[in-house]
Image (spheres, rainbow, N blue to C red):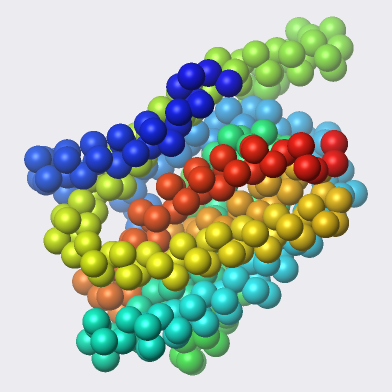
Length: 344
């Protein structure tokens, strides 16, 4: 591990401060960049995420991917945590904090929107950034792709009825443009690019070992660009929302509390379950991280559609975006430090 990677948390902290400073100094520039979006997905951030995802997609081996079902434990844990536990614990935490703990500090009529924003986050497992977290924990790229793909299929079927149930609504309109575009941008496009690159790299290989060596060397050279993409994403995210953070720090802190408890709690549940069940670390770490991170583009889009652009619910989903990167990096660090406790 390079010195740059070893101090990644320091660079992320500096990127957060840089984003806040640049957002304050050049608000018009960041407003323009924020407006470059389709279906609530910012195109600049999409490119940066694509840069982060691409190296892992090059490492995907379809022969191994086809055998992912032979190791079902990671998929079972991911599905159980994401769909049978996480949305409900997020709803409970929302009620505890915004109907009781923080009730004296907020307007009573807005409590429901705080809870709704948290539910929208909790019911949307990650599609894109999880590939980055998997890469940072040396996760199995084939299995991670299988986990994300299965979650996407389930999300298409369950997201709307689950959110409607928890919010007490008769119907929730899913922003299909956001959901489908995110799958295309963050799964299909980088996967196709990765497959084509892999074919190019391995076309002259004499055997499987030489082919894997070519792929490994290529992805190693790309890794610094992947990390730079992560830091660029952090700068933009905090630059876009810098005014909200600076103007309403106490409110941001209150919203962050249940999100932090949920994130670390869900990770611990999935990670311990994988450890107790004998799941290898390169499957266990991505398995726990998928449940911890959120599909924030989908959550933001639904919040805006249900409650409006300037609603409290929309603000909650945005805070989820800001909290996610530092939290996930801390969990990546923990996962890497505990790798030796898992079976090979």
